[in-house]
Length: 116
Image (tube, rainbow, N blue to C red; front, side):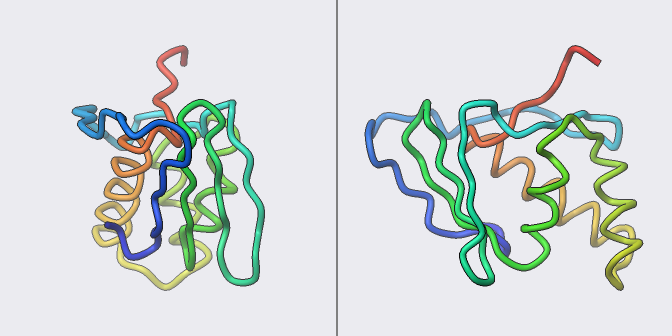
């Protein structure tokens, strides 16, 4: 599990496909799934996916990333924004952001916007 995320729980259906084989690039556009609710609780953000019944917790840099993906955004733009706000090397940022996005895709918290 990514260090910015924890506690994936399925509160409705136990049978979820966790094998997302999407390939992410800097040009990939991601967006939070429309049927989700999130709330900031202290130093973490809790997300509930209304379709799957999963809830998920994000902390640290995962919180501003979650805020960024409320609208369609490229992974490049996410990385650029995080690098501008935090002292992080480009390669480490890319690795961490793509890892987090892959995990959120697997957990059905985000989707790839293929319309753009």
